[in-house]
Amino acid sequence: MNSIKIFSDSTSDLPRQWLEQYDIGIVPLYTVFGSESLRDGVDITTERLFERVSREGSLPKTAAPSPADFIQHFTPYIEQGMDILYISLSSELSSTYQNALLAGKEFPEGKVHVVDSRNLSCGIGLLVMKAVMAVRNGLDIPEIVRLLEEMKPRIDTEFVIDTLEYLYKGGRCSGMQNLIGSLLKIRPVIKVIDGKMTPAYKVRGKREKALEQMLSNALSQKDNMDLELVIVVHAMAEEDALELQKKLQEQTGAEVALATAGCVISSHCGPKTIGIIYAKKS
Image (tube, rainbow, N blue to C red; front, side, top):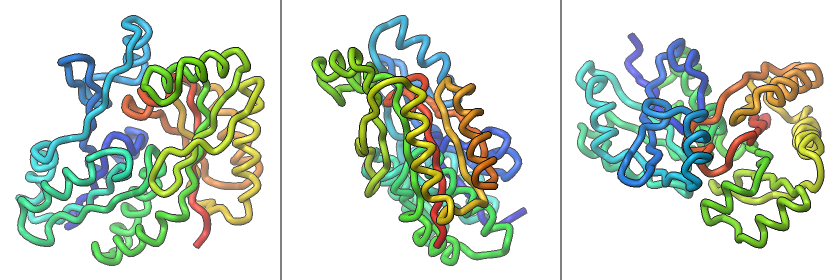
């Protein structure tokens, strides 16, 4: 058994088979409907989330794992003599990172190492996979942390949001913006910049136009793209995701994986959200 256990949280949106194959630990965030707290990916799936929002007409809140949650997940591995390397959701988006730091202080010094991904979804996932490969190559935690810190600014995360409804329900756009956007079929595109979800531009017209623009943006970086792993992530948009995956593979030669967005990410962005995530070369 490796002496280092890699952890992330449910917002990393890593495919379940990768979690099992590479023995990656996941600490779930929460989606909260009223007084009911549901663990992302454990007690509720993305499909059931959308069904419930459609039925009830309101979005859940989202909540970070508590320090106690982290302690519960970390303790069995610490007791086996392992060290923990946890890669978190951006500290700009959640208190998840801070709570993991607090939990780490409950263990002997140097046993728990926490890295702020400054990203979300499979932007975190790319960092996790880099850490997994580094462990397999025999690197120690300080060396892996240096690798991750160098890689973080090179991650490019871009999403097309299909509907303004979830942004409106979540208080991220006004009723008038939602109405006008819906009438004009405006689709916002979100990028992660400095650890935050930032509106990058808007595409007016058919959904296909927005997806083609996002694909074009990625392909414009083809010569600067780390082809080892590119990820297409989606929320109930598998057909479009498969088409993007195919085009990216054909036009870049990259290893392109498919992932499904979890409940926390989906509750902010809504159904049919789709993204392309890759790292630029160092």
